[in-house]
Image 1 (spheres, rainbow, N blue to C red):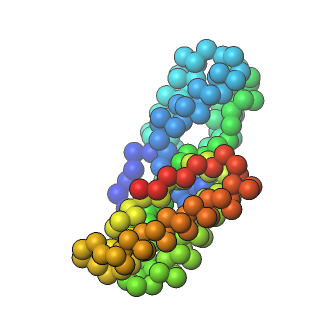
Image 2: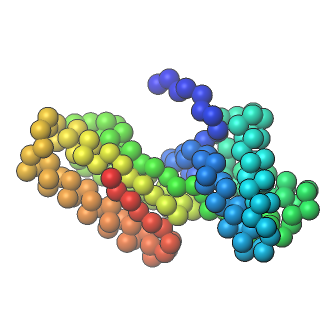
Image 3: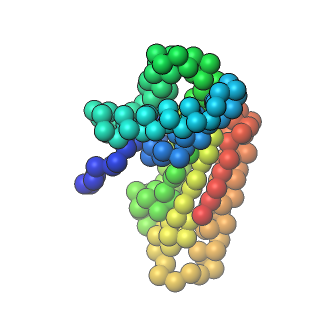
Length: 186
């Protein structure tokens, strides 16, 4: 597999999950901390721009651990006299996107059990990594791959329903431990 260089490093959430470092997520995370610390939001904006600049232009790697990212942000905030902002910074990782189509490709055509196993593993790995937003995308494509169907069929509808029900079931199970986890399926 060939990976083209990304503008920002990826954030490692868990052994199984990487998330793109989205400047909007970074800005929102710092904005919430500024509100909680009663610090002007313009400071959060400046800090998020500085962090984004560092990650884009000076960070030496292509992947950063989520704990390392927040440790670096806190260190910088404390160094510039914004300890109150650092104290209110939540270590919530960015949303994780799970490609159902990629999991179906890895499982192989007709191997629904392997697909569900891979999906459960990725789902729980993300939740265990502290993710608060999980997006599972490519549902129709994954169904067609698993069902080896060129056109949508009754079997596709059943499989689509099974995958959706499975995801909702796993979400309910995880919410016992992570009540604020949101799930989107598309």
